[in-house]
Amino acid sequence: MPWQRLVAEVGGEVLSDGRPAFREVVFTVPRQSGKTSLALPWEAQRAIGWEHLGPQVISYSAQDGSSARKKLLQDQLPLLERHQKALGIKRIYTGSGPFEGVVWENGSRLSLLASTEDAGHGQTIDLAVKDELFADHDDRRDQALIPAMATRRFGQVLACSTMGTDDSVPWNRLVERGRLACEAGKTDGIAYFEWSAPPDSDIADPALWSSFMPALGFTIDEDTVAHALEQMPENEFRRAWGNQQTKADDRVIPATLWNAVCDPNVEAQGQAVFAIDATPERSAAAIAVCSVGELPVVEVVEHRRGNPSWLVDRVVGLSEKNERAPVVVEARGPAGSFAADLERRGVRVVAVSSAEFVAASGRFFDGVVEAKMRVRREPVLDAAVAAAVRRAVGDSWAWGRRSAQEDVSPLVAATLAFWGAQNGPPEADFFVI
Image (cartoon, rainbow, N blue to C red; front, top):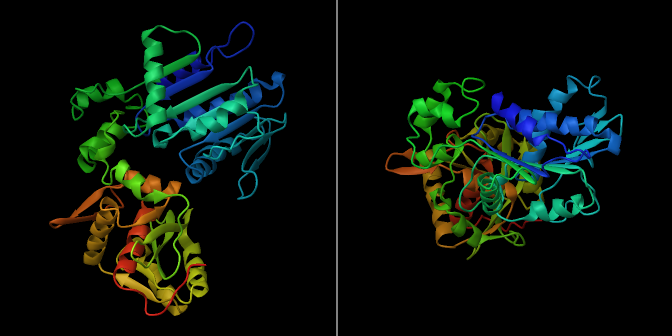
């Protein structure tokens, strides 16, 4: 697409000594505009086109390890497999092990970089791809990458994302720096590209969409955008399709309130209740647990992408290890179909009705707002809470699975676990192991 060609041609410029003209290339576009199909050839070109400098190390990262793995395995590696021989690829690793990524015949490597402060320790990186930066609330990715690239004179950083909220501190700072560089007419250091709707524009006017949606007419059509406009809250449409920064408080659960109850070091201990949920498409599933007590602790035990066939065995194991701890599931929800199998295998299933799920959603919201719980901080749960939307049910509401832009199964499982723990203690003592 023309926008991709522009970014590649300018961001890929080199100086007379062979160094990239721009150490940092930053671009921001609306959702579904083709970020991956630009980042992937950039990675491949680094692996092949810079081999005169020796084997190149390329690291890809997203908002969390699970999301990065999904994007690499589902979006990038299948495209490389089709041209493995032509691209000089020695081997593609897709299994869950110590290495997932690509090794070229010349020794270059593409791999994942975890979004943790110490992820890059001991590494040297030639090309760092930072995807979905809007989801970062601190500088841990840069704390991992900057030292790993310090000695790489020919190194380059490719940063891309849709706009976030005012809580997206690292991304907003980078956007501001890029805009200032453009205003100052800088031609080195950072190359910045932005396609977004002006703040005062009529976001619902189809006549304006092509001015800030560079993929419109290529991979996106007007009917798709119009449907999104009808289905999504205005603030989320502005962020996802208008590529405008929104307020963090536009989230159902404001980031400040969520952060106040989160702690990466707390654990659910003592009497506890488990809960499960899956996406409507059965493309992911989650297990959560909540302790029973005056100040309940909620945590996500496990979350996996892909077919949730693993769920029953995992839940049976958890229940058996915890003295037949009960498991809560929404009877008419996507994971409700697992209830019969779980019961046949001796698990005590607590099936909640649709009305109870509405009540559970409200109670979880109140528990966060009133700080009546503690939550073990997990990236997948943070992402689900950030993406959460309300689905109207009569005069009340429940968490919307289909209307959410991300997988919210960790949030729904946590909500059901909290509901189960709050509705009286289990019949016997259950301990989380």
